[in-house]
Image (cartoon, rainbow, N blue to C red; front, side, top):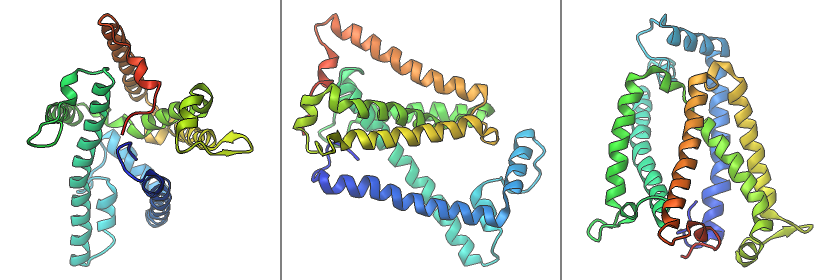
Length: 266
């Protein structure tokens, strides 16, 4: 999933498409069994009651809560609870690592300050951007707990839009950057069409499908005005930061677009 992984022909396949297929099958089976057990109408109803403030059950309307009600076996319930807690603990460091790598890339590309790519010789990690991520996380955690409508903002919806943008870029990449594509290890073609563009087209199709689902499914509330505004602001702020950085670096004789005209070094 990343440029620094060695033996990409093997690791990319195992970490990307294969992992996605396995996860997708497990998720589909889990969703089917869950809805078959509790029913779609019940799930929608408790969601409505929760948002309108009329929900009065002793447990929150979360998936693990209702799964726990399906058994009276203490050991089984403890195992499910521990699994849920471990999932939450695991989710934090992987998000820290993900965002740290993103900031590192921004800094390398001169879009963000150079300090964000500083790696401590002692800790072997970009400590400055890790601290910044932690501080920002506390701010957003406080906002998430105190501003109810923020819970409607769907990160999956935003990621689906990103998938569409990445898909479009992937489709045109072999043609817009033909020299770079021909120098890569994935310059495969089928009937003269780059496989890279075909996969990118599938990526865009999935992104469009998911985006359509979130736009039209009112029960998810991801299409609420507040949610759409927040997602739009995320993209707008990104464009603003990029162009401010581009102008700022240009005045100092640095063209940041040069970084996108060659394959990144190992």
